[in-house]
Image 1 (cartoon, rainbow, N blue to C red):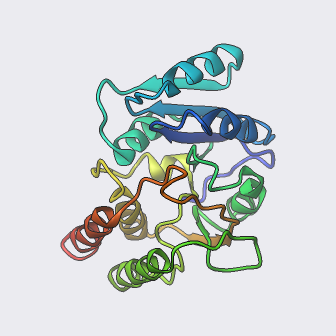
Image 2 (spheres, rainbow, N blue to C red; image 1 turned 180 degrees about the vertical axis):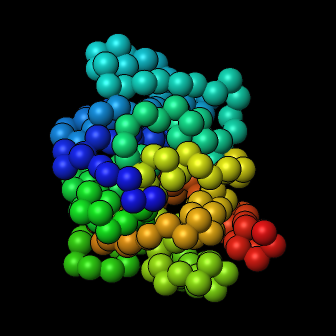
Image 3 (cartoon, rainbow, N blue to C red; image 1 turned 120 degrees about the horizontal axis):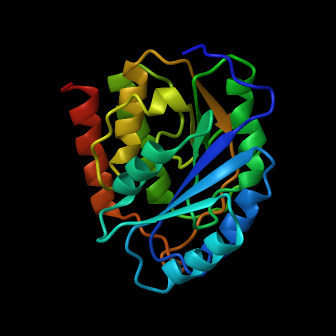
Length: 237
């Protein structure tokens, strides 16, 4: 995984979207402001709140936006598979549409790959001095528990397995067969990338989390699913 990459990054941003009408337009604008972005592959997971109409208008006005829509709701994992399969730039970066993560962090996330040190880079909300909104204690504890279990099965020392920001050389992530349809895609990606022997770095990122009233979607059932996926992909394969 040591293929040469140009000094000027060329990035495909994968943006899974489901019912994010209030945030997706600003999220796209912030992503497109980053000079490294060659294309934004937006995958609408059958939104029902008018999001797709907002996306259609945005795609008509900006040629770097490549819009795809699922004919039924399938989950974040399914949208990521769609986006990853269609990426064409040297580097693939995952970006949520809910404004919890700041595209201003792209330069730091890309640096280990562009310097030739890494094949994959994962963001972490729990290291460094970046700003973080203070929210749910039990979510934080659950995240740390799942990260610990994931590390035990992969022999990695990540601090934030569930973080959205994950960056890869394109040939690496497209070589991995991803299966999960929902939020279980996070531990699945970590386990399968670890198994390739890729060089993995972790970078501090800022985090502006949402409350459930503000539209946060992940819940306790997704935590149970993540536990299942850690065991399935970390131990049983």
